Every structure is written in structure tokens, then in C-alpha cells.
Length: 236
Image 1 (cartoon, one colour):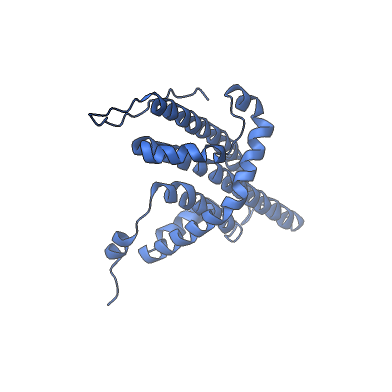
Image 2: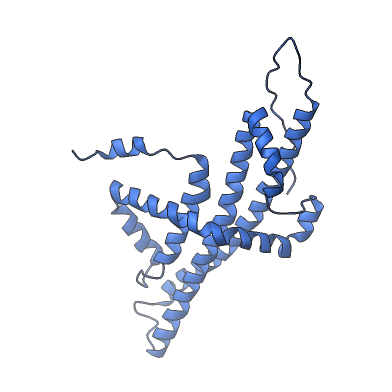
């Protein structure tokens, strides 16, 4: 017997890391590639028309492909984030006393926090997920910018030679492709910059939680309740 759509949705269990870290950036990656295949006229309207015709099974397939795409781009997104952070925002990193954009030096601390302060570890996971989402999405926006610019130049060259920029590829359509390129570039830099903010919050939360745990004195005759650290939000 064929499963109903509602039953399929109940079986799908997605954590916050999956949604933010993989699925959302993966959808943007698919969108960047889809831009290369759609027709020239009104790309945004065409995309909305396509999404309106998607049923639930197609959407689930799309989410699965997006998850895989988000998982694969992880191999290139962090190096891009590390390069951008050090080359463009190196002064900001130094000001916040961040010697690295990696969380690897804090692995032992994260293990300790997971065992001794589960509540704080859950908060750290959220910061880390948002951090990863931002630099993954940033690279995806970069791919969108490249696709939009490539399509824009292709239309200009093809129709310029045919002296037909008033038909299917009119100036209004060209401006729409150019607008997609500009917005994608802006979102690329904003996403990378925001990833640094979430990185700073994560590191400061780790340090604050460790200081809290080191300050707790175990009691022999009573069990202490877990105390949640409240680090100050860094101004980044």
C-alpha cells in the first residue's frame, strides 16, 4: 500500500543542524544551477510558476537532493569562509581575539560541555549551525551570482549580434538578471560577515561556559542544579 504524504512527513526527522547547515544552502546551490537552464524572460516569475506546480513527493525529492548538495559543498565552503575572514575581516578577528575561524581547537572543551552542561551545549550547537549556514549560504549566493552574470553576458552577446534586444531578451529582462547578480553578491558578503558574528558568539559562549564550570564547587551532600551560562553578546 502506497504511503500517504502525511505519513511520509511524520517519518522525516530533521534536526536544526540538518536544516540550517545543509538543506537551506543546498536549495540555494540547486537554484544557482537552475538559473542556467531556465529561459531568458522574467526569470523570477518563471521560477515561481515552477514552484507552484510542485507536488509533495517532488518537494521531498527536492529536499533530499538539496540535503546532499549542502553536504557536498561543505568541502569548499569552509575554506572560502576562512580565506574571506582572514583577508577582508582580519582586523575584526584580531580585535575579538579570534586566532582562528575553526572550532577544532575547542573540541575537547565541547566534549566536556556536552557531558557537564547539556543545556549550554544545545545553545552552542545552535550558534554553530547558524555559523555553518551563513558561510554555506554565502558560497551558494556566490554561485548564484556567477550563474546570473553568465546568463546575463550570454544573452547580451547572443542578442547583441542579432541586434534584437527588444524582443524576448529585452532590456527589462536583462536588468532582472543583473539585479539577481547584484543581490547575490551583496548577500554573499553579508552571509560571510554574519558567519564571523556567529563564530565569535560560539567561541565566547564556550569560554564563558568553561569559566562557569570551573567555578562550580561540587557538593558532597547535595546535587547541584545545572547553571546555564549567559555570555554577553559580542558587538560584531
